[in-house]
Length: 319
Image 1 (cartoon, one colour):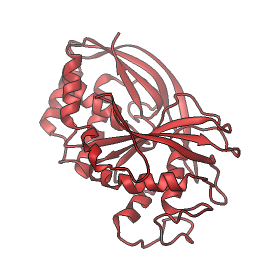
Image 2 (tube, helix red, strand yellow):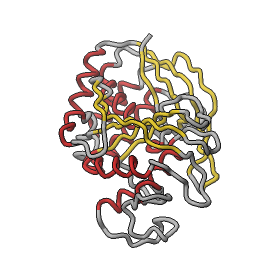
Image 3 (tube, helix red, strand yellow):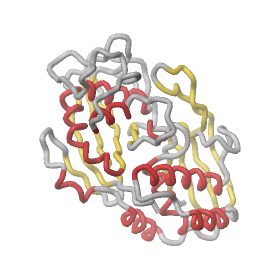
Image 4 (cartoon, one colour):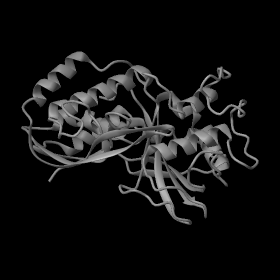
């Protein structure tokens, strides 16, 4: 369904400079880098968009009320029930060792109207990562942004993004509900489905470490789409559709799973860990076609705790 959501995915490739950091790979380090670049917290000529750089963080800052100021706040996580209008994902499925001259890729997906700030965001990354130095007291790789592309994963389209480029001309690269429905229809009838959880996934119920029944996984996807649809789309997920699909999903069986525990640090300045799992779960049912549009959206926006920062990423395939 997607609830009127649109998603713009930017693929970024960074080259690491001689001074590195501790190994890591999920959204925390990426988000911290984006946040520092937006604020202009580095040595060099890039001023960033923050008028209060003397403050150690956005916490307690009255801000300017401008959209750019609100964008910066979104990349410094705070205690909030509001969903974040982006999803970060490292493109390596294994922990990355930050070695000099090594290139790493990650994607940043912007949701809804927040895509209008793509030019400002890319300017801050190109300028702010040119010779990125982490602020005093913070770890982080020293890297520069080597290349960037706007991509459409369902259509297989990719366009390079350069400083000062024409982003408006790339509006056709937004993933919409029509694209997702079309991709689901191309798959057609399906009686067996593999779900590969490739980053730490915490679904909470029935247990953060157990393979989820299919109806529970689907309900988590519905909850995520409902949350995002209310904030950045056309509204809530239809209750009648949710109930009907969950009734159908109750007939799906879990035939096998190959999961193992996985955890990572919750966020910078927070030593608590997100505990979950990674691995593959295989389901069988009469036909997965009715569920595919929502599952494909879940593949784009991730599910569970820490979805915006890279957790809860899964892939779908059939045998």
